[in-house]
Length: 110
Length: 112
Image (tube, rainbow over all chains, first blue to last red; front, side, top):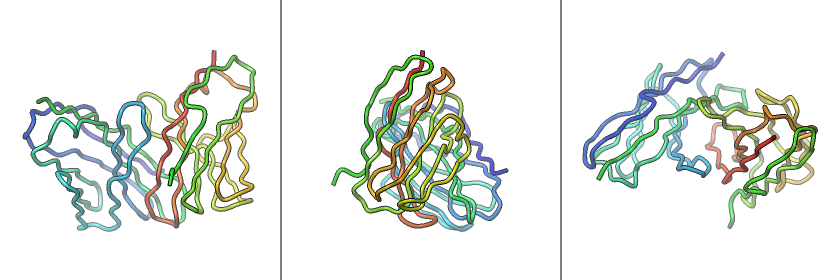
């Protein structure tokens, strides 16, 4: 059974304090690993897709990396507007279902 | 270009009532899915469709029905609402296998 575990559950950082969020996964034949951002009361917003170990993608202050067992979302010099819950999900090959983690709630303090 | 729209935004039902959650997309995506999100749990797939006229069950299908008569619309029907169906429901679409899903704004449903 596919599984996704995200850590930490919650993270509070000072503005400008860089850190990383972790997504550990087990899946039979990874088709893709996805990162989403979710603001309170809204739907998840797509950030990145990673397909194979060693792949990296960047967007503004965010950088996602992937190994065979985990993915990291690195946040560099975060701003208060980066506060949100960050979700990780995996899709197995030949399977429509995305398996989601429970998310990391990130708070950036001005 | 509205993307993915869902109605209603909020709904309160009594146990045993039925209702339909609406989802529409204007991106011409083949794949559409329904998820539910509960506190402390990840999003879970209820039903999905890979094209008009084709639907299949996800992880938690019991108590829900779907149909897909057009590419644009994918309604979710609750046949006889139960308190366990209190949740936030999200519709999502994507184009092609392995591609990212785009989510709607959600419907918050409370069953009393």
